[in-house]
Image (cartoon, rainbow, N blue to C red):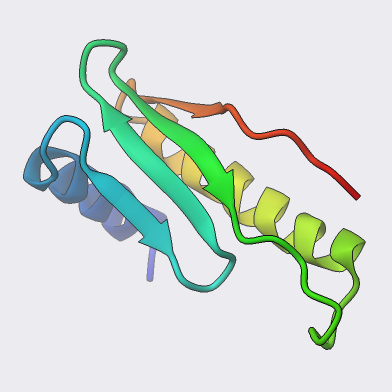
Length: 90
């Protein structure tokens, strides 16, 4: 998918979801809430690491942070903030 298509997808998604609506990213377990007042997607929860996972807690965090950066990059082109309100606990 080209970058323009990704930004178009983000714009369509933003316009489709209701204020306060939730978006879960299955690949990394990120949970966002739309905050129309702030024109922001708020990351409010992350899938926690479990000892049975095939990756370490730090590897999971790296995947989540990578997805967060990509999401922030795309939505910022639309003037939409992506705010991380989670706290990392190892």
